[in-house]
Length: 532
Image (tube, rainbow, N blue to C red; front, top):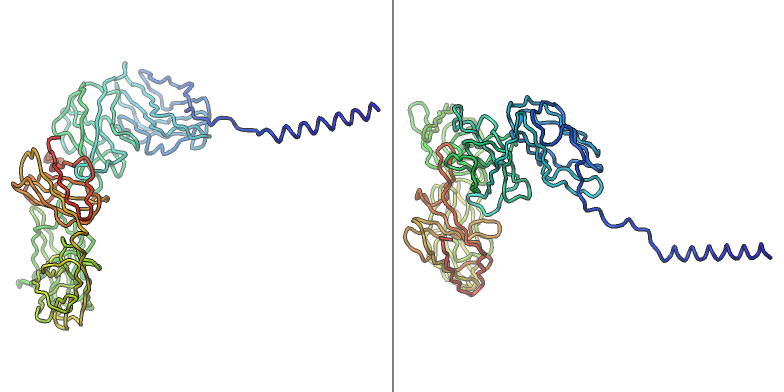
């Protein structure tokens, strides 16, 4: 009987245990949100008279490195980057110094957010290890903000550099040597901050450094600079505007592409270049235009197969000559495309693009017809550089058009004629568009360029003014626009970037602080106060 009672007792205990298991769940507790903690460093952080080749950092938990090549800022920069080990999770990190340290110099290793705990990726934010090879730690600071000189978007990972101005300083040093001090805005900071600086006179530079070598390469890097030297200590927070310098013109790889077409790549600005093509002492006429969507030019000239040709290219102080023999190659075919697809907006002109230069055209073989079959008067305008023929006429709302070109209406450079061409397009109603009147207030100087940008910062409309403060943008497509003004100081009707060696800043750009919502059938009036 006692044995039976024991069995019942055990069965009841089992049922109770199972019931409890069903009601409860085992959890892992709250998620770990605490960053790793440095427990020891050898040598101690802030050491003086430092002469070691290795630093060991020990944490209270396993840590790992993320994007340490981007995040780690060593200042002053070292010729050979220190090695950070191990690559796997560990409680101890080693910094192995491969460079010869400078005497009486304060060094800092700022790890940014690259040190994280192994389980939850909590970063040890802006951890910095500092030491001095001398008897004291430099302690002065400097704050710097950066922005783009023309675009509204702000770059991340901008390097900010300080070059010591001493008897060895020249402006060309930024192309050849690393700076005395460096910091970085990283991917989240709006301000770059220097710490552990020594008293002195410096050149202040910012670089969007494509090669991450702390040297200025005009081909790849954007630069910003403070025009005057700065002195430290200094409590000013400097703002540097980044821009891409316009390279000096340089021709690249002149070659034959077809029977009468030759291509030439280039760097810089190809505007106003001088070209001479000669066969012996004889000048050969040519046509110059842009290769679409590429930094290349096209030169069209006729020369018999086997002729030896000399092409001379020059601009300002640059000059280069090419010699080549004309090869027997196929002629370019003739084709045309419409620059407008479907709907022609009132601010646009209808145009057709040609794949080869149009040498002549006959308007008697062209007709522009409305939907009621009546003809529309038009004039033509040829853009030789872009191989675009424009058709200018008075557009009517809610109209359908058909442009017809009979055979022989167009002749290209080879005197090849077009076949029959037909292009259909239409217009919207006036009420489908909006109007914007911008009133400029407190303009510092003229001329100015006022632009409307879309969400990708592409220019959708532009007005130039040498005295008017009221500008009308009529028949705009409905959308939200960004408004900006450019002080066109060199009067070339475009924004001009700065130049470091000339110590010339970019032309000033001011953005209206809010987007402008232009809606269909609306008139918007917007004051733009340029003093703010």
